[in-house]
Structures are given as structure tokens and as C-alpha cells.
Length: 145
Length: 145
Image (cartoon, rainbow over all chains, first blue to last red; front, side, top):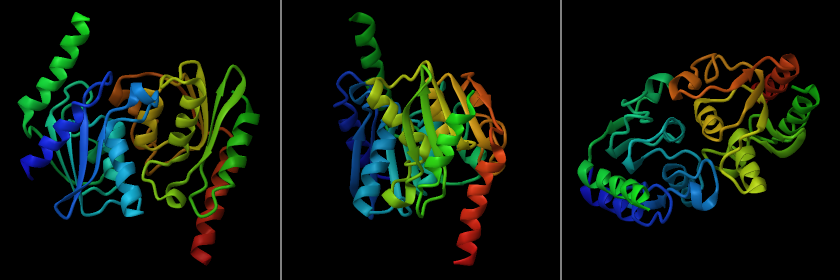
């Protein structure tokens, strides 16, 4: 785990414009191979969460739907859809920032590892305060708009 | 529920080429607005299951990530990733063909409605024999290849 990679995920989260600011990056052999930000609203696409877009970019780069040997860094604990995609992609390790008590599917609300019977290494709480402050600022902005 | 729509899903499932033959269609106001077949292998894309591709096509057609008022017909019970996407898309009703005891996420292995706290109308077993025979033929073909 390298903090610089979570910092990259935070940097891309901040480019979300009107979407909820969530950023994800995928690393292979110590190098970033994909970066993405949540684009559900901008693209009007149900599945364009940051994690899904990052997986699709990594698929394209590696020309492979299996992402064995890859690590994902994401600013918020993934929802069940993204958690299932991460497991199906065979990503080796997942590092997330803020736990999501409402939807988090790596232990907070549910655990897709148990539901799907795949095990991967997951560590949450990486730069948690910084990751959650991006979300707090966003929602505060909405309330004051 | 109209059997003709499941027949359309079966017809598109049969166009899967080397991918596992699973077809999905989305209906709104009695008309088909999206059709898709599983393209994970062909596109080398982790998330290109039939249901996800159908949702993305419907998003594009309606210019909306929310698919309220839509129904999906799919030949196999959705996996957790697709089930979560269906729920997040606010699809009203889901009709599936064959239950999937290994991965089915609308009651067979898990139930994403309970996990995510969204409720939608789901009915399985529609033209079940026809839907499962496409899959059986595919896997038999692989064993004999």
C-alpha cells in the first residue's frame, strides 16, 4: 500500500464536477494503469461509478477482462455493484478511504466476499479524513446551493 | 409479463458466439428499448454482462441513468453485480428464465433486494426449459470441443 496512490485517487475525485466526488485508480507492477472519477450524472449512465470506469480502462489497457495482479485504490468503500465487479475482475488488493455505512459492500453494510465466495485483501481507512472531507464539502455545497 | 419478450431475450442470447449465451432486453411502455447479449469474452470487459449492456443502451436511449417504468427480461438469474445495477437503475420489474444456484442474486444464492434494501417485482422461471437448454448446449459444446 502506498499513500501516493490514494492521493492520486483523491486528486481525480476532485474533478467530479456535479457528480458525487469519488475517485478510483488501478495499479499494476507499481504503476498506475487506470484512473477514473464517478460520472453517473454527467454521462447519465447507471453503472458509471469510478470503480467500474477504472476497471473498464484497465481491461482495455491489458486487453483482458481479468485483472489479476492489480490493486485498486478508491476514496469510498465500494457499493455492492462495484464490489462484485472488483471481485469478478480478480483484482488482488483493494484499498479504500472512507467506510460507507449505508452501502459499503466490503464489511460496513454487507460483505460481497462472503456473498460471492471470493476472498481478496481489503484495507479501509486509508487517508480516511481527507477522503471523507471531499464528500462532506460536496454535500455541504449541495445543502447551501 | 409477455412471453414474446422472453423469446426476444432468448433469440439475442443465441448470438453470443464464444461468450456464455445470456440475453437481456429492456421494455418500456410495451416496447423494447434495449437488447444485449453477454460480451465479456468478446470485448474482454469484466462488466459486459448482458444486463449491464442493456442498461447502458437504455440509459442512452432515455438520456437518463434512472430507468423507472422499465422492465427487464433476462434468460438467466442475474449475478450480484448485475442485480445491484438493476436495483440502482430503478428498473420496476424483472423477469428471468433459469435460476442460477451458484451466483443468482435474486433469491437463489443471495438476494440483493434484502442486502440493498430496495424492493422490485421479480419473477423467475419464465420459459425456463428453453433458457436453460441454450446454456446446456453451450457447455456441452465446450466439453466436446
